[in-house]
Amino acid sequence: MKIQKFGGTSVGSAQRIKEVVKLISKNDSSIVVLSAMAGTTNALIEIADYFARGNRESAAAMIGKLYTKYMAHIDELYSTEKMKEQTRAFITDKIFNVLLSYKKSDFTPQMAKEIVSLGEIMSTNMVANYCNEQGLHAVLLNAFDFMRIDQNQEPDINHLRQNLLPLLEKNANTKLFITQGFICLNHENKVDNLQRGGSDYTASLIGAAIKADVIEIWTDIDGMHNNDPRYVEGTQPVHHLHFEEAAELAYFGAKILHPTCVLPAKAAGIPVKVLNTMEPEAEGTLIDNIFDPGQIKAIAAKDNITTVKIVSTRMLLQTGFLRKVFEIFETYHTPIDVVTTSEVGISMSIDKIDQLANIVNELKQYGTVVVDQDMCIICVVGDLRSKNIGFESAITNALRDIPIRMISFGGSEHNISFLISLKDKKAALKALSQELFN
Ligand code: ADP
Ligand code: ASP
Ligand code: MG
Image (tube, rainbow, N blue to C red; front, side):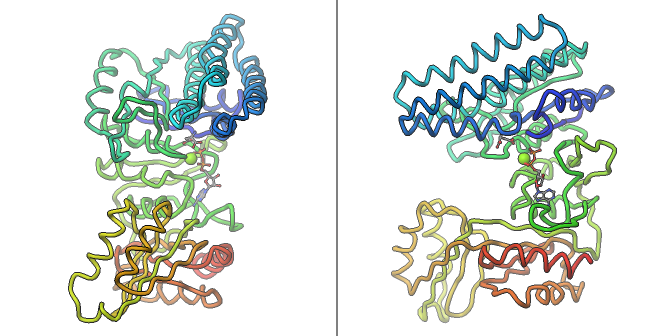
């Protein structure tokens, strides 16, 4: 069985949905994981924001606009009046009437999560109806029946396996299942989600849970490129990546994959393919556990980074200093990405800053604290084992004109990371492409 995940642009119009359905595997069984149609999640977030601010008129106006769009999509997508009517009824009653009903209540953050979940519920319903109209028998699975996160926002893999496998067995004669990416329940059985871009994560989690043969991530570009195409011209697809390399790139900002989506596939040893719905014959990127020696693969950048530096002469020749510092971050549930140390200080980068004031306050008991905001992490990924001499100097040479705040190397054999100011990001990405790939 394979997993086929189609992103927002891939199902972004009636025409795109028709193209996507042609790509659904006709031979193997597959579970198709869908995002909301492009723009829908953003629109739903905006609607929720209007409600949260008590601006019901703007919310209603936005709901009206979205409704008109969906009615046009339905009109264009189906050929039979019966299917148009059936889908219109669902989208009107179960989605837009629900959206409008929030006008009456006092708005809570939980309601925002419920609103945001509606995008994937619409797209899966529409695509399943289209498949069935085309004579492809599709069973729609409700992600709320098996996708759940625990108190720490971590996916509950046992719950997924225990609840999804019986659903598949119950429909043993079915070859095509369709389900929602991104959305889930939480430990209180309330509607929640896997964070923006989380449909990739759903696909990988399901793939690992059912031991799929392959997880296909279908998107709007011909695979993972060697640099961020939004900032650098002339980037090229990377045809093969090791899980470790893809995980680093996704975590350090390659938007094409959700930051943690490679991990379940890696743990289960299931290959991931990144493919282009607009150009299905293109090779794309294969991600598996085979490592290509002697190659630099790609560059990525992660924005909205803050660096925290603590300098203390008391650190000299002491034991336990690092632990004390890291414990403060742990207490405030703030993950550290990059760390560099010297005899008298530690620099750390974080991207979650809601507890920054508390952290800085506590760190001050150990030394002088300096905070820099608006930073970014530039990450170069490939075979950086110590016997491969020369890559590090080429990388630092490329960045010779850019002020560097931190350099981290040696934590993994696949990654070298630099902390620079966000305003230098584009120049750094371009310079690295020029030096490493041209
Ligand atoms: P989807 O809606 O299919 O999930 P996304 O918009 O989340 O698609 O991801 C695809 C986009 O990621 C591309 O259009 C591209 O702009 C961006 N992107 C960022 N870094 C990379 C990269 N290294 N390779 C390819 N695409 C990238
Ligand atoms: N629809 C969600 C988002 O826009 C999830 C996804 O597309 O992966 O973030
Ligand atoms: Mg995405």
